[in-house]
Length: 462
Image 1 (tube, rainbow, N blue to C red):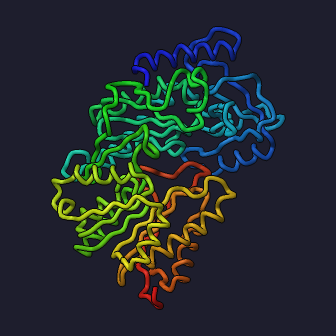
Image 2: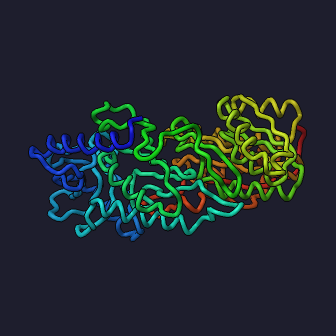
Image 3: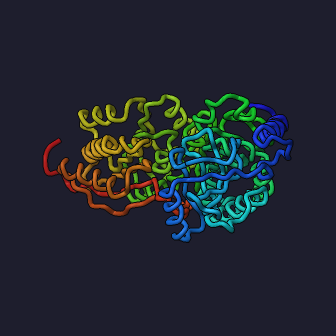
């Protein structure tokens, strides 16, 4: 990526050029000083926005899609502050950030004609509040320290389309809309001011796939993996989670490099392993081994990790070595299997292998509404294989991160599949996101679902 000073200068210079083109006159580079764009939406969209405003949630999760827009006051650039009007209305019903390059045309920040202005102080205050909230959640100094967690959770912290995660002394910023690009200088400055509880070494920028495909000039010269401030990246980012060491690769890895949202569920897996010393554990879709390491740290005797990506299994081994000083992890045996999850589970079943704890945490199967039915069928198939691989008196942990699959639909699918497999589930608990991933914006629902259960004794031979 570009050197930090050069990258941020490029944002300032190119944002100024963009604003001149949009407004017809030279104006300050700061996007909140650009001329606001008036976005006139359909009556149905306006009513939807007003209903969400009535929820009186602390933040808005509302969006305006391309088909909701009837007209705009001028050809504004991404990142322009937008006032939203219903048909014929003279007072705005909401304000947000405009993105003409995306079908998701506008992310609402606040409802009502008297909404607070969107400017550098808005960014600074929102980031400061979010970071302070996380500072109060985590112990970052003891032997059980956690130094990897979410600092900003998008619209649920009042900054829709912006996610910020901490990994040790590095902060990773991921943007899901080009509207945020001209605001990057303010975001970096706000993070440098807010992250006083640790020594901030660098700020890394990640772009969604859609933004990465845009022309360089449209991206204001920014690229996926740019270091916007601080030292260049040098290998994986090391961090702690409840005292266990991990490495994250933000540029090549999934999400921002690690599945931070599963932290509380990993703790629960460690507790299950601790209650059954020497147990055999199967972790399917292991990625870099979060659940595997926690199980070993709880006292599992043998852990098998399955992932299609060879690099993921290599990362599990690397993380295992990273924790060689932890006696229970050092004592546990680890087996890595590079294979399609369904195929691997079927082969293990045919080989007659069973496990005391089976964890299945697949990627999102339903990116679109039309994928939901197939996703539920896949979750059911995985649940059936999981209970077939679970030893008598063992446990299963079944998870879904598909936002389009409701909790009721997911839990119903896996419980029905287990029933059909002859091992109905005795559900111990159902869980969701870790505490640093709050869901509190109007219109937002949790995407992460997990079931902790004990399959009943087999009623037929496998």
